[in-house]
Image (tube, rainbow, N blue to C red; front, top):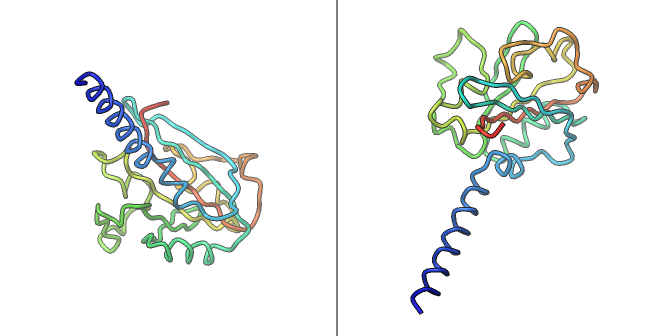
Length: 176
């Protein structure tokens, strides 16, 4: 009957929309690109204005930064070098193949963080990964750690491991 066909179409459409939302969600993208055996240390969230927040999921692995870099390059993540007064890091977009065409050669005046690689119009669809060598003396004060413009003065308890690599997945969202 016509009612049954309509009901089936509504159910199929709902399932398709749900699947699309799941596949394009930041957490699903992060799970697809997760570095094996890394340990979640912390999740920091900070408001970005309006109804948007940025979350940074900070993972740790004892592997050195070159090994972790090679893993992400092997799965086609283009990583850019950046730094500030407190340390150096690598950063790139996940699952995007740099559709925003970041030009690192043209940007020599500032450091690269999530908002530099993700255009505002695509902010909630863009996920970045940053690799930070935890052997650096003040790595917790780098601009890449905090999702806000405030830096940590003292090392947060959650970031106690010394050595290895911190893997920071960043994304913006409206559900906070």
